[in-house]
Image 1 (cartoon, rainbow, N blue to C red):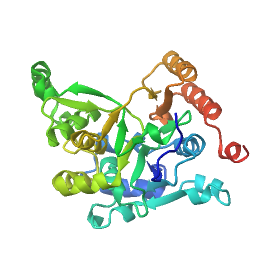
Image 2: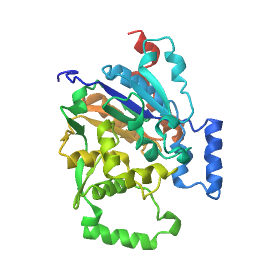
Image 3: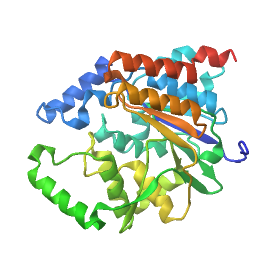
Image 4: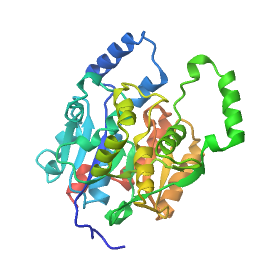
Length: 337
C-alpha cells in the first residue's frame, strides 16, 4: 500500500466525556430532574463513564496513524488527564481539546448536551478542522498501522459495511415489529437501535429498499458534506441538535454521512481491513480470549472497539487492558521509540 499520497491534510475527532466528574454529574442530574427525575436508558451512567479508553485511543492514533495532522478531543468543559502527560512533548501541539460551546454556537439553548448524536452532528464546526477527518468514539482504537487510503481515495470516502434490506421493505419483519410494539410496555417503545437509526437515515435520503449497515469503526467524514447535509436536510440535523438525550426519533450521524456519500456516488466500499468488537459485559471470557487471539493472528484486523469495559468483571478488564498495553503501549513508550 502506498503511504500518504493524499495532498490534503486529515484530522481525527474523538468525542469524550468523564461521567465521574462531579460537575458533569451535577449537570446531568439537574437536567434529569427537569424530566421528572427518572433516568432513561439514554442517560445510563455507562454512556458517560470511562476507564482510560481515551488514552489508548489517542496513543493508537499517534502510533499507527502518524500522518494525521491534528487530533481533536471534543468534550464538555473538561480536560483529559492525558493533556498533562503530553505537556512539553512533541505531541502537545498535535492534540487539541474542543469544548461543546465552540461547536454549539447558534444552538446554545440546547446545552448542556448529553447526546452523542447531537454533538457529532456539529463536529464539522470545529475551528480549523480539515476538510477530511476521521470521526471516532473514545472506545475505538487502532491496533495496526493504517494509511490515508484506508479512509479516503481521491474524492471518495472509504466505507466498511454491508447493504441490508430495510425493515419497511421486509413484510415479515414489518409484521414482527408491529406485533412487538403491541406487546411491549409503553415506556419501552422508544428503544434506541443503532441499526434502526441507520435505516431512518437511508429512508430520509431516499433509499427505498436497502440501507448500508455500518459496523463500529472509525468513520471517514468530509466537512463540506456536513455543510451540504445541513443545507439539504435542516430539519433532520436540527432534530438531532435539539435532543439533549438520544432518542429513537433522531438520525445517527454515521448513517447520514454514509448514505449521503452513497447518494452522490462518492463511496468505495472496502471490507478487507476490518474491526474487532469487544463487549466484555456480554461476551464470555472464552469468547474474548478467542477474539484477542484472532486479532493477533489476522493482519486485516486493524481496529478495536471496546464497549463499557468499566462495567465488566475484573478478570475480563485485566485481560483486555493487558492486551491493550502490549498492542498499543503508553505515551512514554511512544516518545522513547
